[in-house]
Amino acid sequence: MWWATQYSLRQLPLAYYNSSVMEPREELFQETAPSTDKTSAPAVHSSALPQHEKTSLSESIKDFVKFGVLAVIIVIPIRLYIAQPFVVSGASMIPSFQNGNYLIIDEISYRFEEPKRGEVIVFRFPLEQSKFLIKRIAGLPGETISIKGNDITIKNTAFPNGFVWKQGETMPVSSTGDALVTLGSDEYFVLGDNRGASADSRLWGTLKREFIVGRPLIRLFPISGLTTFPGEWNQ
Image (cartoon, rainbow, N blue to C red; front, side, top):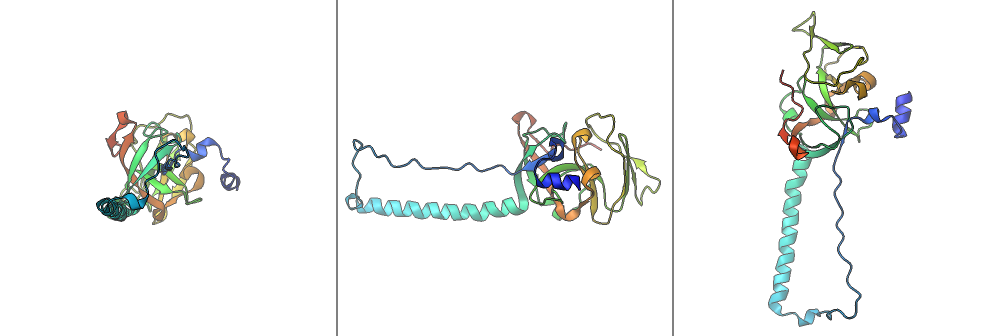
């Protein structure tokens, strides 16, 4: 299919990636190379160091190693199972999220409860699982979702005749692309808030539960947008 080919070549239109999230890259630290200036102070040989300084240096190294091991033991489980930082890349979640927003993602809540309609989630892109996307849940497992223009109608066991989903703030568009989908027992239908610039379930299909990573817990940047549970709609 055209989108699969283009995506593998990483040449899809910008809207296809909007909005993805990516893990911040860690900056590399490089120590300054030893000076070759012969006019600098002469090197001090180890034999010239007093015994108490040798002991102090050895203890400092041991303390540093202990601290490093402790940091790894604490940080890695937190990053893997509790919370993880991501940076928003793209425009499909405007106005809720802007390009460059720095988010902390809660990865533990969905281990104890199921995702709800209207919640913003971060998930692995089913067609390329090394990629992470951010969208909003519109349809829940077992429901039938109908999209006509800007209206979204949901049918489920509680509302067999359907109800129109009262949404929060989204970007106005003339057409969002009509769709009619019945979801499986472990499937969700997700949409971007900026419907005219979002590649979501309307394009690549439903999202299985297993791909959901978590939900935004804190927006740290920009400072003016610092908040908890960013993008949350009052429904």
